[in-house]
Image 1 (cartoon, rainbow, N blue to C red):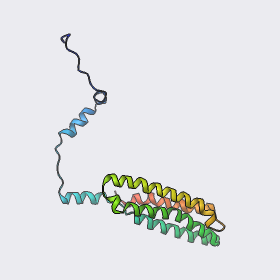
Image 2 (cartoon, rainbow, N blue to C red):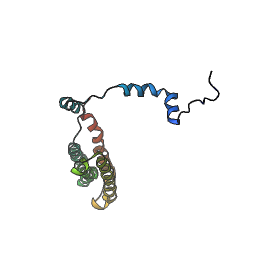
Image 3 (cartoon, rainbow, N blue to C red):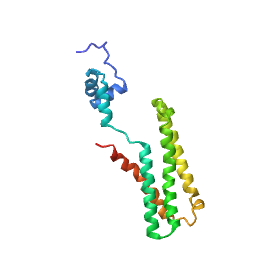
Length: 170
């Protein structure tokens, strides 16, 4: 029996959550695991397993998709304005993509993790703004603009981002 003068131990809110959800076993498992420094070969092997895709490769494929779609649209309709609409739609994705790729591969963005994260946010915001402005100016830039063709070109070029995920491998 407890002595009446003894008070039960008070746990903090975080400790109560850890105990209630059974997370303490998980935390103990990682605390008892010793830290192992990787060798250069192990790092290179791990890096090759998680290879990244160059943003310039993605932009290049977007250009290719935009040009091929413009040729298909021109062949289907026979109107040069339809081809220009497709090319402008592709440019509304490619030009901001080039800005983002240039910004993210600059020395400033690669300097530190904080600079990289801040750079990503800034370049992504710029990319969105440039895309929106280009789409707002589309009817003034392209004579006899075909909005459906422009939007299909935008959609196809943006789908390249999803395709790029499969290039990384398994």
